[in-house]
Image 1 (cartoon, rainbow, N blue to C red):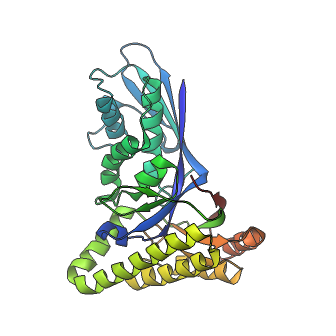
Image 2: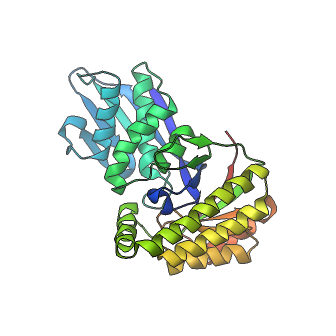
Image 3: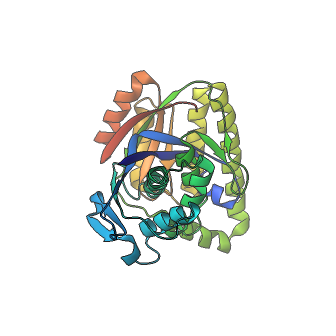
Length: 311
């Protein structure tokens, strides 16, 4: 038996603009995770996937060719040079909410790659795991930025620019986040497509928005490196305002963001695609519980407190 896990993630800065070449910062969320368990099976049975949370059980070679779980298994086997699939069972579990901007799809794919490759005697480096998972992200997101697979595979805060080498960076000090779930599913693919359509209609306006968000992300990295959490919080507020202007927020997200700020958060913003999903608040340890309570009272369906540390 081989067990592998992968964390969730939140984007602190740069949503949507990252798809258009601007920088973004994402951090792993260890409070939720995906788990893959690989075991040997009886000869001749092929590979069976048991997705416990989805109520699915199927043979990989019988699933549709574009099934994300089938694809990540086949990509991993291809990378390992295995042409004839061994007899295995892959059991999956996840505590990461689906379609909430926490990287649930990338985490499941990452856990599968790690568990399957290790079970077959190979430990792949994070860069190769990330590249494999990115191929599956195309199914989930259409035109993915690559940030989910990167931060989850490396399990480290990253400064990310699409098409450029990954940059991990040093944090001035650890910090705490409170993540509030609106309870509204928001498929990333749909929101990303809407933004692209809006960009095609008015490129000059959206390019300006993307530039402003990119500058916030750059300043956010510097503030995190210096441990200036007050400034990080102010930049999160600014980033949220730009995302509201872009049209990817919603009333429920705005209400949670405002509730967190009033309860003492240093800053708060939506995280991920928007129009549902999660928001994230930067807090000091002594205000975390107050912010958690405020988010629940404001209608959050779930609240998670997590700490972000350097690599």
